[in-house]
Image (cartoon, rainbow, N blue to C red; front, side, top):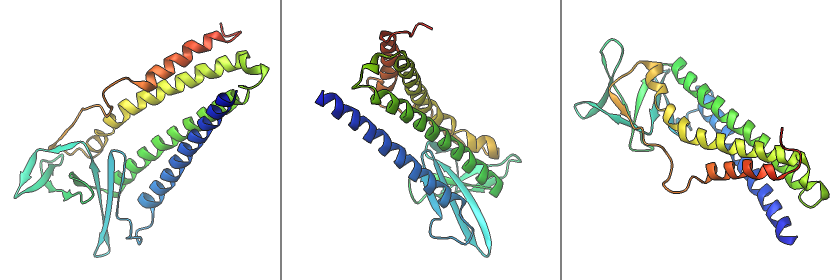
Length: 224
C-alpha cells in the first residue's frame, strides 16, 4: 500500500515537473525569438534542431537560421556558401554556439520558422496536459474500489496511445524540420543528415504504450 502511494506521487511530481519545464522553455522561446528589435542581449538562441540568430547593423536587422544536422557542400575562400534560386552564392555565418553554420533568411522566413516551432511546442504541451489529466484521474482511484472501473481502462488506452504518439513525434519531427529551412528559402548547397535522433536499445516509449493498451483490457467493460 505504501509503495503504491509513493509510486503514485512520484509519477505526478515527475509529470508536473516536466510540464513546468516545457512551459518555461516555451515562454523563453517566444521572448527570445519574437522580442523587439532593440533587444540585443539575446541575439542567438537554440531550440531543438533550430538556431535562430538576429543581429542589427546600421539600423538594419539581419536574420539567420541554422539547423544542427546540416552538412555544407559549397566553400569559397574557406567560407561556407549556399546557392539561391537564381544560382547566386550567398555567404553564411559561423554558428558561434556550435559547429554548424547559419544561412541568411528574410524576416518573413525567420518568423515562419519561429511560428512552426511555436505550434509544435504548443502541440506537445497540450498533449502533456491531457496526459497529466488522464494520469491524475487514474491515480486518484488507485487506492479505492473504483480502481477497476471501466473508465480507467479507457484512460489506460488513451495514455498508451499518447505515449506511442510522443515516440513517433520524437522520431520523425526532428528529421522533418531539417528540411523546412531549405524548402522555405529555396537555398541549396547543403546536405541533411537523416540519422534518427534515437539511442540504440529498447524503445521504451513504444513498449510502455503497447503494454498499457494491452493491460487496459483487464479492466471491466472495455470491449467497446
